[in-house]
Amino acid sequence: TAHDADAGQAHALEGTFDVDAALEKRRTSQPRRTTKSSRPHIEPRIRFDQEASAVATVVEVRADDQMGLVYMLAHSLSEAGLDIRFAKIATARSQALDVFYVTNARGGKLDAESLARLERKLLATLGTHGRGKRH
Image 1 (cartoon, rainbow, N blue to C red):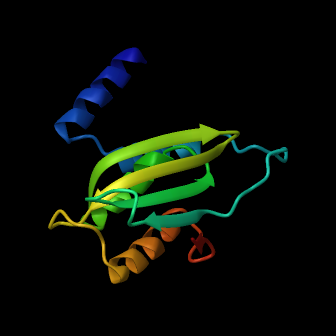
Image 2 (tube, helix red, strand yellow):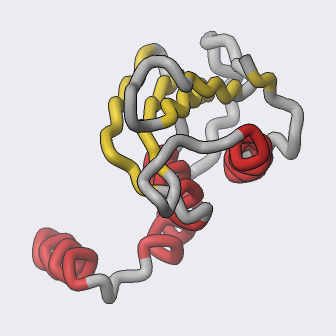
Image 3 (cartoon, rainbow, N blue to C red):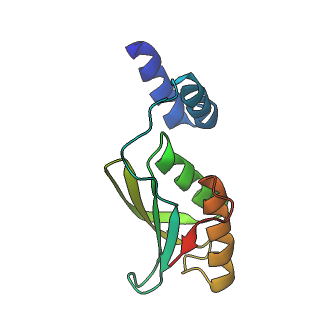
């Protein structure tokens, strides 16, 4: 109901709403599609750009769109101790292109070791367990 949605938004703003549980409940309650989609499946890809911003590392994620994708990616970035300074989110033909400008805890760009850890974390979040490609 609309009242439940308003209450959920208020709890989310207060930090007392369990978004992970709500997302999982929503995903499991959605009927699974039994017909094959005519849209091509794409393997998730993670790309980093250290030149596009003077102060942040740009993390570009291309993947099939799914419910809660932006939340899952942002949550993973936050769990990695990164600050999201800016984000651009786009979806076309059920394929997502999500771009995050992130900084480390010191406010700087990520080093090579951090990029490798982040790539593994994001691929695990997307459920690929290392099958994606880094460009």
